[in-house]
Amino acid sequence: MTYQERLDKDRIPNHVAIIMDGNGRWAKERGLERTAGHAKGVEVLRNLLLGGIKIGIRYLTLYTFSTENWNRPDEEVYNLMQLLFDNLEEEMFIRNETRLHVIGDTSKIPSWVMEKVNHCVENTKHFDRLHLVMALSYSSRWEITDAVRTISKKVANGEIKAEDINEDMISQALSTNFVADPELMIRTGGEIRLSNFLLWQSAYTELYFSDTYWPDFNLEELCKAVYYYQHRERRFGLTGEQVEQSIK
Ligand code: IPE
Ligand code: IPE
Ligand code: MG
Image (cartoon, rainbow, N blue to C red; front, top):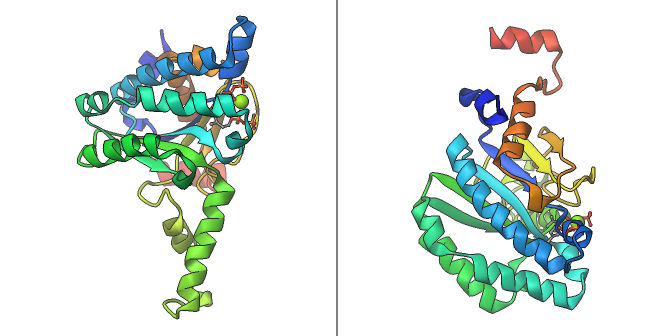
């Protein structure tokens, strides 16, 4: 029986976040340029979008390009921007009733790329079947710093008092304020770290690490991660007995 068949259809996570890692190593093992790994990674992404819709995920947040990735060689950065430009197909989003959201410091992204991205965001904003959240030039510390700035300004101009700052207010000041925290975060490529991704939002997210390089990832692997998620006990600080009681 496949993992897809074993899934409990009533307990599919609403929001899944993915750190898509391992493109470079996948390519290197095949004697190819890193670029070839990124290109293969885009193909996988396409299939997973359809797969995500099929199993009923509503929000998929993808770590596409981190703040730190700007420090890669210019050629690789350019190549990644070009890949994004070439593969952002508005028709595919429309066909699949998918709404595109972008989070991150997009002021750094070249304007020829952002024009296309913004167009796609605008023209898909009425869709609600799947929400694809692309983290572009994103890092959690950037985002939290930006939120602190926003809230500080409100305190400075007397809109709120420092004592009134609460967790909800911080969540609302983050770029992910339109979606609940992810229930599941997956990282492919074998590394066991978060690399500055959704640090605030993942306070109680279930983490799943896969050794599979992103270009080899597929729907069945996604279902495997969801299956493991469904078999974890989410206690949120309570005892196992308390959790059992609350389910009864
Ligand atoms: C992830 O794959 C894609 C991006 C970070 C843009 P990598 O390019 O990090 O692949 P590895 O980790 O070097 O194998
Ligand atoms: C994280 O992968 C960023 C993305 C997947 C976009 P990296 O490959 O950049 O992370 P590190 O450097 O291994 O932590
Ligand atoms: Mg990497």
